[in-house]
Image 1 (cartoon, rainbow, N blue to C red):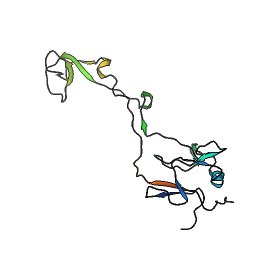
Image 2: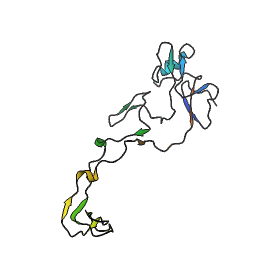
Image 3: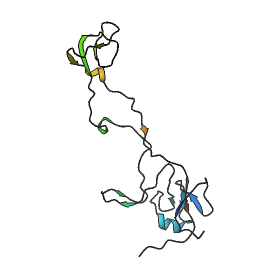
Image 4: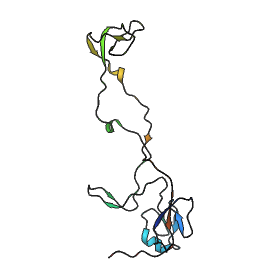
Length: 174
């Protein structure tokens, strides 16, 4: 294999960084021992920029190409975004209604099929759909859920990402 470009990231199916590489796990490196790599990365991935800088952290992350998109979004190099879990708020849910039809007649039927909820003077809870209809009280079909997050991740397969600490300094395209 020829020398990689300094700062080039490779994917590997094993769980360690080969010689001349470091895992992309956000580790901090001293600028003094890695000045050429710092010249390429700067503090795009963190660090104080005077004595240290950080390598990209791709643990639990999907790489995304940098730059502006035709729709207006812009992803600058080093940006991190997204979450593994999301709790939806009421404002994020599509507008919808929970219509439930009931009758104010006494319940006479045990089977729900084709029938309406009805007054329950006994063990019967359904009534004849031909009778008068009334809206249920708002508390009958009230809020639901526990506010817990749900998974927000695309399907994935875990591999290692490693960045070249040594190699050829990449020339700029003219």
